[in-house]
Image 1 (cartoon, rainbow, N blue to C red):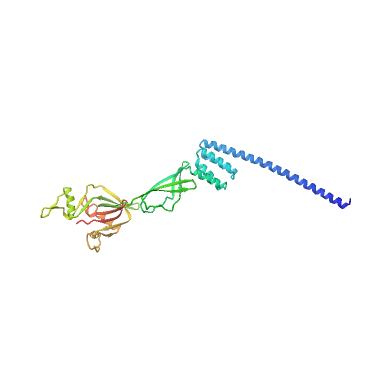
Image 2: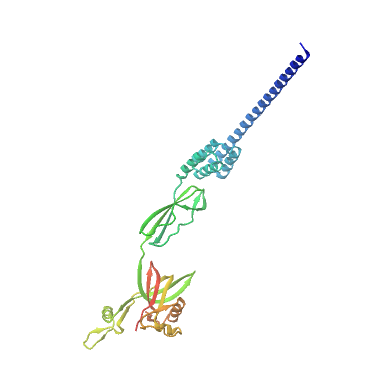
Length: 350
């Protein structure tokens, strides 16, 4: 055998031995790592089980915050473990802690754990919550704004929940009660608003205004309401019912003087709110008492537009006046919409 061939055989043998030794070393290393990892996993699982057991015991003792802390520690050790979330969720549900179970599943979704399934579970838990109910009312054809928040109690704490409504606006064209729904995703709460749309009621009263004033940005009038009858025949007929002294014309027919009659059987004052857009009117002669010249008018019995301040100054000028039961100088018609005055104007009395 030549030397060259022998040299090649020796080199091949050395190479084979080196590969064998390297392979053996790697296998041993892998075995060592595998054994250590299994040990770590077992230790971690034991720690998680211990934390969950402690949390469960605290939950049974109604020490809820401490129980939550232990469950959170368990999750910190394995945030991606779907079964761990489900296990703790079941513990919460058994203890009737629906909110804690909901928050837990929401955290699983936030951690991107089995999102599709966890979303279904969150919806299922949410459906078990009691619907938060709100009642409100508004008059027909007015614009209604849904509340932005609702206050409720969750886990014995009062919380203001922001609401996302299913609707852009409420329909107030029809009279009746209508339900609208909203949702708060953070707490899984469904909100039901029952809106009662009320009929718009118009009314018209007459009386002596005894006071006009403003409180907290809103204005009011105190009124002594009366019955007012205009026209000689009508006034005389009503005065006769009250046994009032009448005059007699040449043929002996009784009549009440001045062509009007005021009946005031109740001097209790009624208070009306004045709308921000309320219009006011005074008689032409009323402006004279305020220091103005007579406004141009075809008749001094027809009221003219007055500012709120001028109207208020005039009322204050003549209340009270000579202790009259019915002050003719502040006798006004009051037009009301849903109990709020939108027009106030003086009644001429000769």
